[in-house]
Length: 298
Image (cartoon, rainbow, N blue to C red; front, side, top):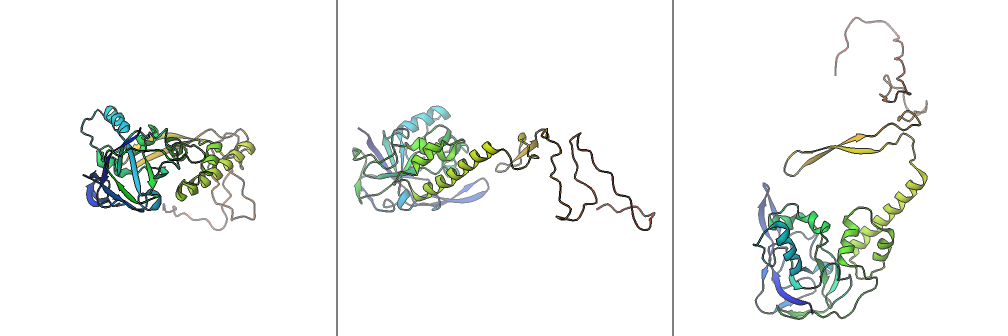
């Protein structure tokens, strides 16, 4: 039977990170004895970034001891203590690929929103991306009934919501590429899923449907060409430049769409074209009086 190992709380504070100050509540510490759980939080707990944490749909964050074991092995560390992932409840069991949105007495509402602060807490900047790719995000719950909890309490599943979409699958659906249309529709039929994630999945479904239409009809303009990543340049510790290069010019001809005569004034210099079958037009002959003054470069 799944068990509650620890209840962790902590108030938000300012922390120095990469040359700036971050206001965060990711530092959590164990509560000794019973803790009062209320509709919006646990007594003594606070959030620094209320855009990603807190509120009725994200009142309590859960993380599993099994995931701690996983990250200890992955990072080769033995200094990870409970609460370091910012969770309120450290549990034994309730794995992300087993728990479904909309189950338990605390109703599961969504996966953890992966933000940089958890990487800040553990000193592992790449951790937010790893939580997604390793399918170990943890999850939020809303409080159905207020009351007291403490370490050692058993965790009993009281019901399973419709859809049976796991936390890990829900997280991957939003953050990983090529989401399945059927799973997006399934997620939107789960009433316990938080409104913010429902909105994201609606937008994503529209995008997936739109890409399907484009794939079926082809590009709207025959000058479209694929792009590839030509280089990745780290400009600083927080900024990376991605250089893109165009693919080959389509066999249909010049990549530049012709401009209707009435659409805009005729340019003095036509667009450069790399296609051998689309040569540049000659410059128009000069008109008016000649001048022996060299043009000024600007």
